[in-house]
Amino acid sequence: KAAGWAPAGDRMAMTLLATMDEPRFLVSDMELVRKGPSYTVDTMRILHRRWHRFYDLYFIIGGDSAEALDTWCRIEETMRYCTFLAIGRVGYRERHEDVTKRLAQKGLTRLVWIDAKAPDISSTMIRQRRSRGESIDGLVPRTVVDYMRQRDLYRRYGGSLFCWVKGSAQKSGSLVRK
Image (cartoon, rainbow, N blue to C red):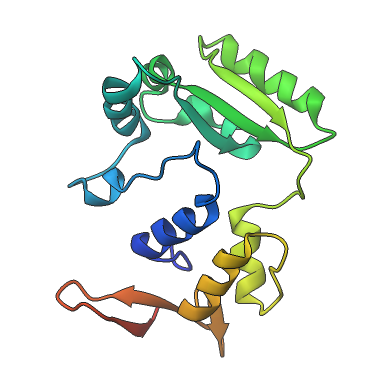
């Protein structure tokens, strides 16, 4: 991942912490253990094979990602496996309709917009606030804030970004400069 991103294991841990009180969510490590590149289409194909008889599958994305869905690898196939739920920004309904129409013209119709009544936040904004030493309290669950602080994720010191990186041959991590 790009500089400034937490290692995959930390992102997985934060996702587990953020969803632990929501029994309808299932967090999977399948993309972490898969060898080689990981594409959404491959993940959704596997999930569809396992679960489509029991559940409708939804892939939750931000509105900015929805605008670029037509650039995703094999998106037509991916949309056979799941419906995309795009978390839209309140007050941008006209833009959402434009995106929906543009994608529909390309046969990409399994997109549902959900107007968020939550604060207008993004993972990029969270990382930026942390790197500037600004508070993220109230923007992510308390358990995730505590985890980021304990692991010192997304922080800048003297202009260099530090992140926790696990060594492949060791059980504990080491602090390294990126």
